[in-house]
Image 1 (cartoon, rainbow over the protein chains, first blue to last red):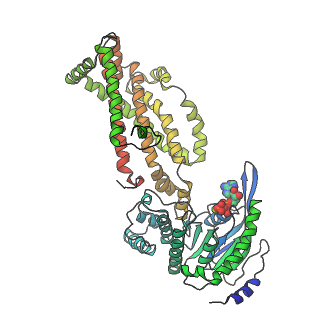
Image 2: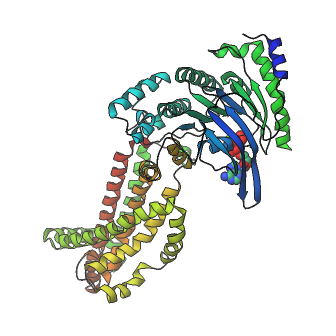
Length: 285
Length: 265
Ligand SMILES: Nc1ncnc2c1ncn2[C@@H]1O[C@H](COP(=O)(O)OP(=O)(O)OP(=O)(O)O)[C@@H](O)[C@H]1O
Ligand SMILES: [Mg+2]
């Protein structure tokens, strides 16, 4: 593990990115590139800039969390990447290819419960596979694998109404992963859960990530959550949102809940809290 | 205990619930009996319960009412089926495609305020006095409401469900068949149950003008020959038929949508 002193020094090297400038520059094509993406909503009362021109990129297999105050445009970024919302400016590249509209290469987990209530747990997990025409037998195998991964064996024939909130979100994660997307987009998926369930879900998700080696873009306004999960935390400014700072998290992997009690974790937390506090204050004004 | 029965939103034992329903019926029968057996109202206007019962038995025994029931039921069924066959797909499209809503909502919203019964003279001019005219009245009485109600049901499908299906690879047509349709199906069945009830009420309107058979016609004839017992039997039969179809729809609902109930039954 990196010593705290060293880390502070490293972090000093990270300069605040200028607007519309790539926040990290690496060689080779990143998995996901957001280039100068901005969003203005037109409403009855005029125009709302939800997102200022923002650029960043995510490496293959990286777990990135975006941390920002309420209403700063986090969901907007994610929905643009998912193709569910059209950007007013800029473009999104996945594996170097510009995206147009939604597609199964970008799986998504929402904060609200979005399991199809008329389908069993198993049929929910295999919904995308069935659309793709994957055979019955293979679907069964994949479903079994993910049921085991999320710890819900024996629940395959339950309907969503019979599951707790945490179970529903686990199934939603399994459904997104079973479809084998190139990137998994998660919009505060644990936001509606109680603190204990949330902690368990974070560990379940890390396990699933380590096993699947997926690239994940995860949105949260919970500081602990953003640190615990991430390789890098991106902090967003208050509305109109843009990226304020990238904070690489160099905590050892695989992680479990005990890491939250370490000094390093506390230091990251201090730093992020002060960053986010400034922005939250701005947001209230 | 009494206080508990009159606390708002409080559950009460099932026995009390059912007994309360029976009690209302018994009070109703009691008032009827007092008025009729006690000769308070002229029997020419209000027959006794026993009169009504014997008339009903007679009508069923000599079988004359069975053909009326059959004819009326056919009219309601086909008029309603036509409304459903057009109204369900149209309502779904209106609920999910803004352009369809824009095209049809104003005109349907307008026509539904025109009373179906007022169309009868026009229908008779156009298509005569046959079965088609009777079914058309029922169609006109139910179609517009049904379509608008289906539209509302479809509109209420959670948008996130549509979004998530796109991220799972669904194409536009699949969003209709795999998400919007199954999500709105319970609401559709419930809408059918309610509008089928209305279809029965339009039956009498359709059969009072220019009909020579059916329950509505029977009621009209009975009125002409001063047979209030027969009128009441006709009304009761329509009520019971409506109730049976309602129960049938509820059974379909219960059997088809176990996923809506926690216990899964
Ligand atoms: N469809 C829309 N039409 C108009 N304005 C919108 C729309 N969607 C979002 N906005 C506005 O854009 C801004 C950013 O919204 P967004 O949902 O991205 O924020 P967020 O960071 O996800 O907030 P939260 O933490 O509350 O989920 C908000 O001010 C919001 O009111
Ligand atoms: Mg949001």
